[in-house]
Image (tube, rainbow, N blue to C red):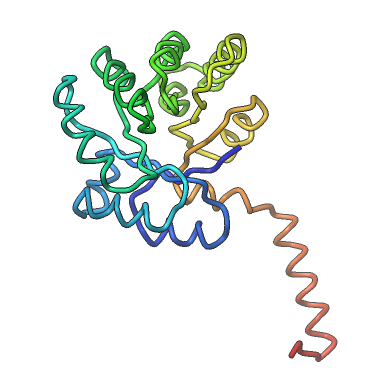
Length: 217
């Protein structure tokens, strides 16, 4: 499973990339606003750090506006994936951009039927939001299982990009189901390394090493 970071904070992206943990990045208008930076500048900087897909979202809601904004966004770098809303106009833009060789990420997916439409439109990625599904009393991972089954039934090339990941359990569940990608805040990705027995083992090793009075180098 590929790991994307869901952020527009450059230092966090560079830190994860340096650790070899990053296959791509997803952004959205809220994350850009949180960064406090110019949209085009921050996307260009992310694309220079990360070799994999970097999702940059259009904000127009009509087809013509989406295509106009997409033309600007996709010129930022070759690894930009134009992020589009799961609406009829968004799917129309997805089809046009995909046919023209541009990566697309159809976002705000909350049903398997929506995911089916995105795949038929040729989306590179579909982004089902598991955390927000959980928030209203549903199991977001049931949605991922349904999409995985449907995509496998028809051999769709669209990759399942699990979004709105809130905690390490979401990551584990997505991997067990067979999701292609998960995107999470950097803090959640860094939580994956944590285990109390790892910490306890390091403490014991360090204590025993100190008793030897030795140094390395």
